[in-house]
Image (cartoon, rainbow, N blue to C red):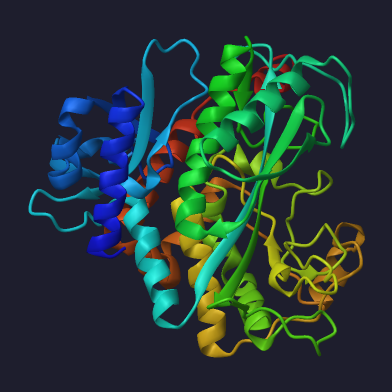
Length: 447
């Protein structure tokens, strides 16, 4: 962003706050685990905040692995200003802006996930590319946050008239659009009380901000209607989990670098090399794309979640799917990476996917033969003969792979890489010592 465009955005914010009588402004940033953090300032502090930022305790960015308090500065990005219009209980209007986290001297803080993504996007830009993404976040509505009692028993694309979930989802779409987030589709998903609202694709930084906004709006609108929304990857045993399939493409100016009219799949060499880079690095980026213990309850065969390292056009059991080309829609040519879940940190996920894809392009990698058969129905011997590997089966396995990854370390930077690994080891240690209800039912009567 140029100094001129930033100044124009700042002027717009100051003018709008005055005209709309916005009293409070929430400054948002994200911790390493993708949890939204926020503090509020009054409009009297706004001009100073836009110029110099606001000080805060930087240890709040570290997730579970808290360190000693450290002074940081949250500098609002005026281009992210939006009034939070869905809050009917607020007596005065409230707006929000995402912040870049800086050190007191003004240099970027390398532990800020938003800065991590900016660094990776600059690498793509230096190569002549703009990175576009379109994530599809699934989630569940429950009666409350104490159990998994569903609001409906509908299925994929079902319409249930007068259903509470439909009303809540509709209000959510309207709230998101009021926040400047374009929506393409909304529908019921496969599992009971599972839903999806698809945002219109855009550049990766804007989309990462949109994902953070999306998750908050979904939860707050549900709460306004007396329900609880969750992005937990696998809340119900024996039912489909929630994924975040990420459609992605690289553009050179207005031209889609993934499109080739002469190719069978309408994919360019750049697109195929990008796919090859993703497939090569998929196991080692999985701790980032599926970062919770619960994520691996979703990544099991039989529930539409990808487990095997393969790609194809029509096959939804593959890790990477290529949506079919429609004539005249060259700009829509893209690949869909299906393993991430909606509880991830989008800034880090977009960073490692881009890094893996760019690696494939830089090294001129070629992907394996597409697998149009159902990989789940193959035997282990058949998959081995085809060279089809698997994603890690647990958070512990994923951590060990990520910890050895040069690509992930470079994509995240030393600070975020080390802090993320430490966070995940803490989570795994806390999980592995638990005595679960399954163990009590299984072993207490027997042992």
